Length: 74
Ligand SMILES: [Zn+2]
Image (spheres, rainbow, N blue to C red):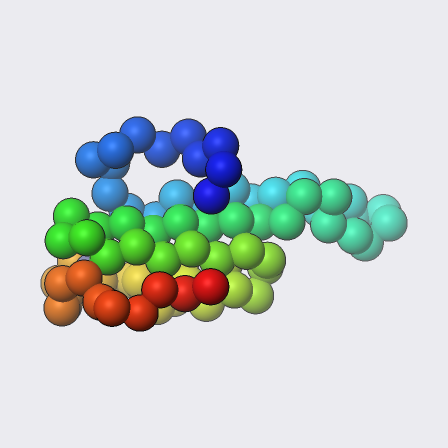
């Protein structure tokens, strides 16, 4: 993710809420989320539905972390 601001070692879910133009009802900048955990798991999501899904899936991750996975979401 180009230009991502979170420093190395600051684990968790980082969400850029984007910019929604409520009058025109369009996204001027899509929401973007990146999740990292101290065991090496990383996931990224772009767009409101995928960001919401990532937030749901990573809730409680630290308690049940299986370690890094081979899957890399595209
Ligand atoms: Zn993990």
